[in-house]
Length: 217
Ligand SMILES: N[C@@H](CCC(=O)N[C@@H](CS)C(=O)NCC(=O)O)C(=O)O
Image (cartoon, rainbow, N blue to C red; front, side):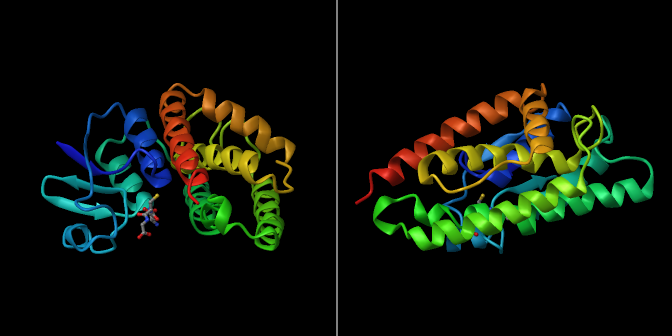
């Protein structure tokens, strides 16, 4: 049995749900007791972050580690290439997503409530965000996904990230242009059969969260 500490609005949770779905696995969602970061949850998962996987009494946090563990446990369909340099490249793309792109996008979360917006921050962060997406575009040649037609480990995180980008760009109106190859990649990714439903559910959860934030005074 697989259990996943997760919340609908978690982007790293969505990344993991896409992977589990692609592997054809069933899992049970657990809500972190008292919310993520709480001391009750930190007693189970010391980092306090979601997602965290529980399998046969083994608890594992960090979405990339969870992805590799699941890919080792259930090797089919393969989500890493065979060639070791291509495998390393896919891992590097996933790290680039998690450490260089997602945190820049996440920095906008605190700007969603109208009362806490800073025009300067929104503009400056947009410059950095554009730089990170331009860098990503230079790294890849989507065909149409990162590993051809096969969904790979690094693709999973980009689906919720595109959803967040669309949502925040619509709300905050910062200057940003998605490089053309990434537009092609985004469309292919969200149309993938293992991604589409999770993506739609994630967009709905994100929009609900954003609407609540926008009504905060
Ligand atoms: N590097 C972690 C990041 C996970 C993460 O930041 N999750 C968010 C929710 S999407 C979270 O738990 N935030 C709570 C916190 O940072 O305390 C991973 O890949 O799993």
